[in-house]
Length: 396
Ligand SMILES: Cc1ncc(COP(=O)(O)O)c(C=O)c1O
Image 1 (cartoon, protein in one colour):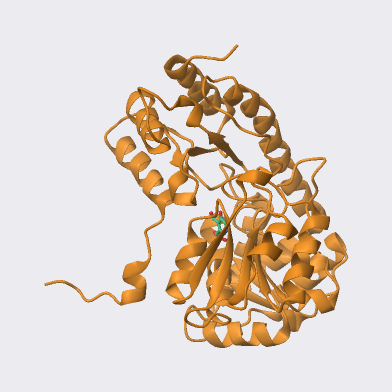
Image 2 (cartoon, helix red, strand yellow; image 1 turned 60 degrees about the vertical axis):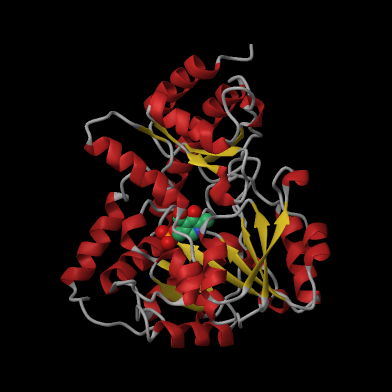
């Protein structure tokens, strides 16, 4: 029997990043020692003080439903944290809790898109963006950013907007490129969209992983007249090494927020109650939280500073310095010729010959590129570089 999967879900593709992760898991299960540079998840454990807050929440009896929008304590902690960190003037009516950044993105897109609306997505993109658009029966319209070294500009957005455009999805710091759109350019992008009645869905899940001189910048700090066109998808997953906790939130105008809460009332309802408690307590404990985030950011930066020159020294590899997130997005077209005809073949070779798991750029809309995650130990990175030098040679 063929199961009649709905048309729009049948059209969705599986996540290529999870396919790479599965390849690594399968090899490990066969006893093979893999170097997994495909993971999009911090290699750190959740800071102990946040774990303790979750236990405290349980001890206080937070085991029941909360409001669908999230506990008032959670929402107001977000408002106060963004005021303290970014000078944002938010109201709790603009904040709703969600089960991770992914649900925040799904809530936002599903409550604004109608079938056949156009959604602008800068390329390369995080794999989930086009699939959410497909799920909403809308159309993904891509903006190629290779000419600007993968940093989206207001000019590119202005040129791409048409009467059918409803939404732009932006992600800075970016997965997969690690590039950061400078704050003044990001503001110009929102201004262009607002002037044409286009809304902006800003995935800020790597918000704090911006390396000096780049600085964390949130669209929450925009004045209210511009902010009304923006929905921020926020997440505790990467920033606080809490991927498994499934904690995220949206910041959007009160009407958009209300629609998302209505939708969520018929799906996940809300994130786990004692998780919300722990997240709120962590944000209130701003000194410890910021210190923990800074320690992780410092370590990612140290790895980045070592890794990128090493990658650029491998024959055929080219990688601009990423300003944020924890990914190196390498142009491997210099390796094409007799041995390799595509980035997929390069990634495949790395897997078979060196047991290095990396993600082919094809899934991010960027064939010819490979994404390496440096959310792994320095020792793994050193071993991976050693093996890649052996395979491709060096350019010095
Ligand atoms: C760009 C981007 N957005 C959102 C997410 C989702 O994160 P979560 O649902 O764990 O908050 C990820 C995870 O890899 C991501 O890379």
